[in-house]
Every structure is written in structure tokens, then in C-alpha cells.
Length: 102
Image 1 (tube, helix red, strand yellow):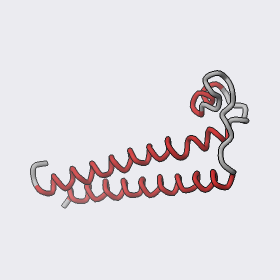
Image 2: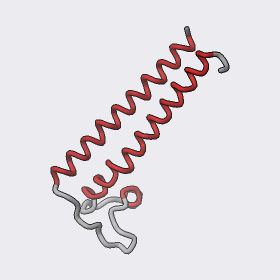
Image 3: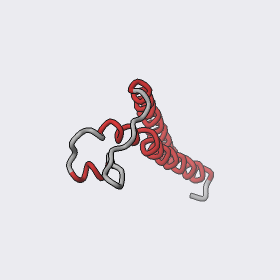
């Protein structure tokens, strides 16, 4: 890891990790709130209720959000962004492996 190709590998792998972490942030900040909203009127089993947290801590339902099309567009955009980040991570890791073999 002390050679210049080793340093490049390190930064490629670090970049891949950052992309994966950003992908998780997009899920928890953009996708999950919409999933919670859409599932608040669906009867879920106990583990699903905990994951989606469709009820407030006092057992009441969550307040309504924006109109449906705006939520759908945000949900779809979040998946596009997550897919792009996953592809970036894959490319960075593949490049790091290719450099090692060279």
C-alpha cells in the first residue's frame, strides 16, 4: 500500500465506501419517510411496524404529507440516485481490483 498504485487503490476503495454510505443516507432520508407514509394505513406485522414506524410513539398515525405525485417523484428520484451511487461504488471497486492486477 506504500506504492503510488497502492495509494490510488486506497482512495478508490475509500471512494466506493463513501458512495455506499451516501446510498444509505439517501435511503433513510428520502425513501424511508415516503415508505412510512404510504404504509401507515396498511396492517403490518410487529417487525414491519417497528421498521416502518408507521405510528407515532403515542400510537397515533403520522400526519399527512404532500400530494401523491410529489411523493412518487421523490421516491423514484431517490431510487435513481441510489442506483447511480451503487454503480459508482462498483466501478470504483472494480478499478481498484484492476489496478492491483496490473
